[in-house]
Every structure is written in C-alpha cells, then in structure tokens.
Image 1 (cartoon, rainbow, N blue to C red):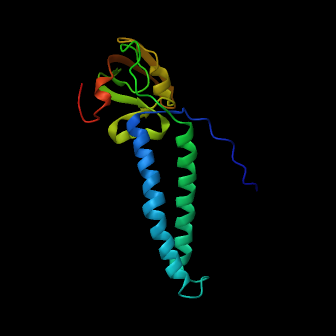
Image 2: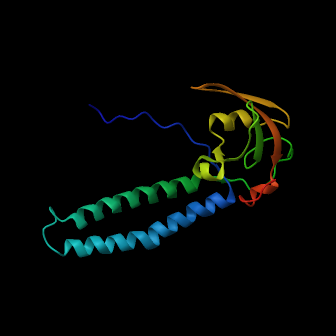
Image 3: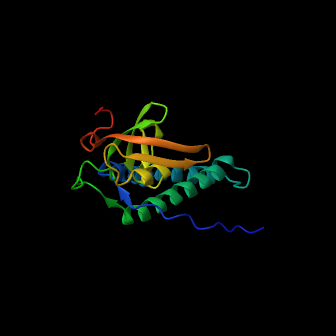
Length: 174
C-alpha cells in the first residue's frame, strides 16, 4: 500500500478582516503560549529517565508535532490570504462577505454569510464561497432563483435579501 493522497483542491484565498485576526491570534497563542508549555512538559518528562515507556513524554512529543504542523499551516496560509474589507460596487448582488437571506422551496427562510474556507462556522451560519451553495449564490441579484444539485436531490432557493452592513456583527439581524 502506498501513502499517496491526491492533491487537495485549491481553496479560495479570501478572508474577512475578523477571520484574519482570528487566525493570527491562533498562531500567536500556539507559538507563544501553548508550544512553550508543552516543550517544558516534554523536558520534565524526559528528565524522569526511560523515554520508551514514558506516556507524558510520548504524548507531549506528539502534541508538539501537532502544534508545529498547525503553526506551519497558519504561517503559509496567512501569507497567501487576501483580506476583503471593502464593499462591492453593487451591493444588490451577492459577493464575498454578504449576508444572504434565502427562501427554501418548502417556505423556510435561512440566512447565510459567504466567507472564505478558513472561516466556515455552521453555528454562525457562515458558509464557504467554495461550497456548492456559495458558488451558486455568487453574483446573484435579489429575487433570483438558485438551484443546486446535492446527493439528496435538487434544492431551490430564492434570494430574498442581500446585506453587507450586518457583516460587522454576526449577532445582529438584518
């Protein structure tokens, strides 16, 4: 067996200012707080002697590798990200950063914010512009209909509202 993995699909390099701040904070926390703590724990565990059966040492080294992997990813990712902090010229169209309210075919209304792949958060209704629905919504106007094909069938949505002012605070309604 080989360990070959096909290359991942390229992600969009767009991010909101809040998202970039969150990634920088995570990087800072990992590098300045968590990594030194784990390094000290590994050092203390190594001083106890036999490392082959020392669980604190083994798991500490594993955690260090996880931290280093995430730090490497964040540093590379932050270099290529483009912060989108300006409103589009036509605010009646759906673009990156927009809050979009949709009416599903069953009459239920849903609200999503289109963000970059680094900011996806289902709890906040943040969806990626790389997702099926995100791609279908880009460039749509008010009252446009969007149809997407999923494994469970075709789903239709109608664009009810497009709002960019709510992008500053995730807790506010339109």
